[in-house]
Length: 269
Image 1 (cartoon, rainbow, N blue to C red):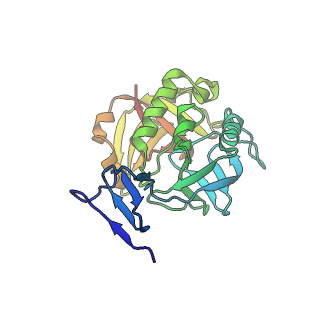
Image 2: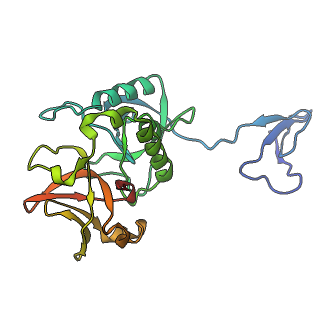
Image 3: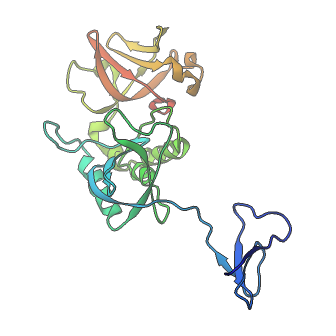
């Protein structure tokens, strides 16, 4: 039976150090963190499970070959046509890009605090074998908007910066008229489905047991759950400021309300 010897010259091997392996004349294996004339560098990359993507439903939802349905975290792409849902501008482009990108690729899944959503989909980031971050690339290409759901904050800074670059360069959805900013005074009673951008001046800030409300007009308010206020700057800094909100509109007492989960959805103008 061959014996295994580990030779540590100096300090212990760090996680980032190179490790070399060689054998002596009797077939004994040796390992060291220093170069040896007969040594070969060995790969100590942590093991990951990689999967093929069996199906792409739309730009932010896929199915892996192990059967799991994955909702990509930190982003939102426009809807594609299905059942009674009309397609939204940019939805098919995001889906086609994702299909082409993942063809003949394997991906690993990086999860965050919450493992699944209310639809039982697994939440995560997809990373290819050559270390391409799919969620991030969708944002960088302007095919997806940043959509942060606390407590899932992994890669939030990278996603936000990529979103700013795509918006500044007017890539993808940022050149679509459907996603242009709507001034608060132009809000109508109907016709605001999907991800929307609303801009106006915050006139009042008030609080309830669960939420803080930024009131823009009698027709529109943004609400923030108090448990996430620690992610935001001092909420009073928004008072009397012109702000753009990003998200989904809900009907509220004859007007509209938008739930804001993260400061990336409140853009100062």
